[in-house]
Length: 363
Image (cartoon, rainbow, N blue to C red; front, side, top):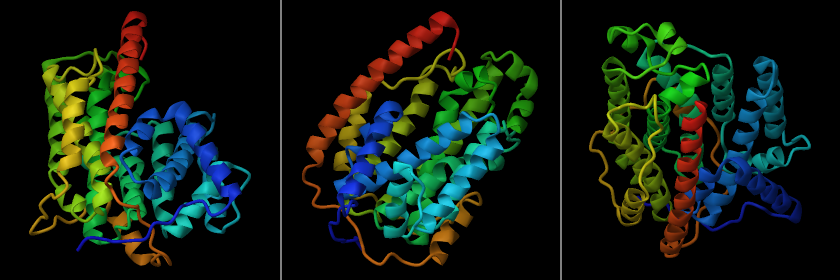
């Protein structure tokens, strides 16, 4: 049954409007891809999503920029606790997040797990198996998928499981694309057990990262795991309000194209970073607009073991007092064209950065 909810703006007063504007400025400086994708979302979802992503951006920067990641995470957890007590600190992102988590009844388990994922990044955690890697992806991306689903009014276990699937799949696509870039920063996300099975020593490879046919088999396995999750997403999209489906379709289609581009380049994501051609982005953005009636799965798959605790946390948390949902969706076409224009700009910037990094040997 399609969800029908009322239009209700996030910001109830001028102070909240100012906080939301500060969140947009923050994202404009470091999260342009999110801003591009968010243009396909209705305003009633886009505004709280900006607040949510702004806090994520602040948290990620705080953990990466601190000498002690553990201390940074402890401080962020205290800020998050203050948000849930309705006593946010002096940060605009915290105040904006307070409105979001209470209005949409987001359990603290979700943002807490996200902070844990940032901590894992800063501590260079090792991932032996695909299950280990999915534990990481569940924290840094599955949590965001679940929170976005809540902003869209989806709280069913099946719908949340599919939202988490999408987040994890997108993270796996990112990892497959960024193998060389991550390695040059001293990070390795490919399952180490897979590398050993392919005849590669993970630590020796990380010290001297280079592409090989053996590495290609590992990257392909990761893309296969992502594709298996993308295939499960239709059932989740079918639970979304119609107005939200183009934006979520765009995310899943464009991220799936990242994996296909890696394959087109011979699975070599060490020496170059795959960039999806603008013409293909346009094709899939148009498909995102028209494919609004995906088939529901007859036997919904259970959540991944890595995301089960996120789904359970929502089930145990009180329902929101007021339903919040977007207005009519007939302006999606205009948003689609504007989004494509911004993706074109981002594509040109990525290509320029890639040429510069190839010239300097730096990521």
